[in-house]
Image 1 (cartoon, rainbow, N blue to C red):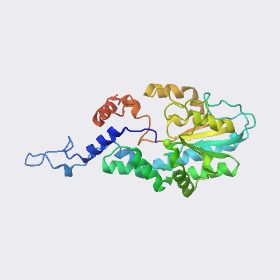
Image 2 (cartoon, rainbow, N blue to C red):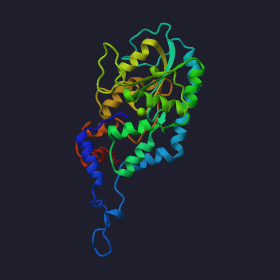
Image 3 (spheres, rainbow, N blue to C red):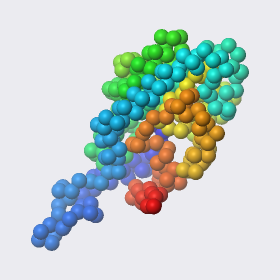
Image 4 (cartoon, protein in one colour):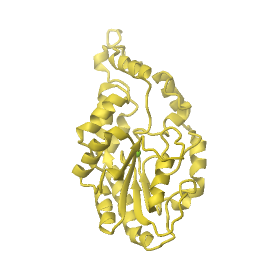
Length: 297
Ligand SMILES: [Mg+2]
């Protein structure tokens, strides 16, 4: 996950989920009275996104397509000693004779956390650290289609599989156990670089992953990167729709060859980019700003 909510907003979200006021679109009852709240499902912007992620075959096929395409190119990248998938800002150490690796994000790249999102849809709540940590510790997240096959193929050819995640470092044991249970190759605890991993001399900005990519680059030539967020590939300095496009503009030729991007309509930094990254704003205000960001022509 890539966003965090302050405690005050968590309290607001919990209160909101307990509210009994009818939805504004509730139809009037036949006697002219407003229909009881229980008859009207609560609005939740994430329902379609989570339903699609969990049930649409198209979701599964996109993952399969991506990982199979990557696998078909992997050995070519392995045998090209100049091939490297770290962006300019992250490739600090010279390539030399570094060992090969691939870097994967975990959530919605390797592991499917849609049940956690589904619980939020059902409860009407919003993301919070405590519930998220509890979900991670359940260790029940399934592998996304194609991901296990790809990573096993990589490992079988002597390519290290490194997971850079914004799961907190203290979730390392639960996360590594979940990855292993789902069938992913995990060489050891050092294969998981969670939030809180420090690289001496590198100033991490927020939860950006650049320092951790640099750390991997000190030991490995990175053949490919996989993620569902732009920040899985490159640090994003200006999280606005235009800033995000600008950040990746120089790397478009790498998409589908060195960088493989997976779909996540349920959450991600694309969302706060639509409301000035202000999670402290009331939920309805954030929703309205998202509506205002839509194109109507
Ligand atoms: Mg992710």
